[in-house]
Length: 211
Image 1 (cartoon, rainbow, N blue to C red):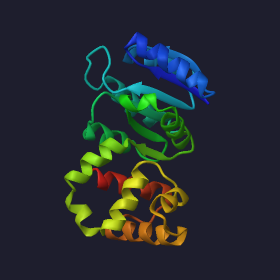
Image 2 (cartoon, helix red, strand yellow):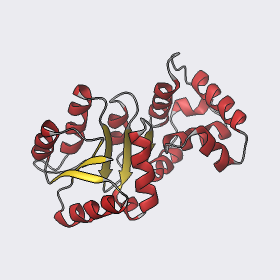
Image 3 (cartoon, rainbow, N blue to C red):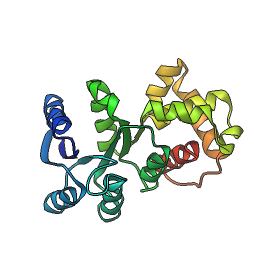
Image 4 (tube, helix red, strand yellow):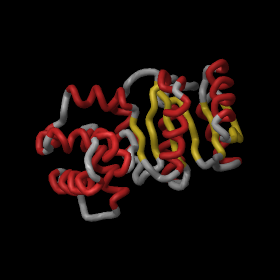
């Protein structure tokens, strides 16, 4: 797939270019700050944009702001946002962009080629992927909405947040596909999610999960 990469560390940026090439992807532009990312996106849209949350010029949430702005105009572009630390609010903001095709990955996870490739494929296919470490921290302080769910339903929702398909969730929990589908239907009901396409409701469920 075709990628645009935005990372202010030149060393990490070059490493990511090589990593993506090794995975068979093409980096059509690699930049080091938010304004350059906007320029690259204006010149050519990628399948997925990979951007650091914090980058120049302010080193706050510049990368995330570009993702939000671009998503409104071009919802077909997938976004994989990278972060040095667990920032649950950034993950929430990313999911609030609407629809699928979004992911949030810690930079420590970049060393795992399989994890990166899986995240890119999930996002390109319109899915949602949240780093397992973010999910782990959320689990230690569950939101009120999570109190309605059974322990098994919380396990299913956590795997949904990681971008797992129903069949992958079934394999991970060693249950039938039918059982997973029933758990997901129950999650949607207990979280009072509107009757809409399941892909959209999965994102809404993950938003509820993140509080």
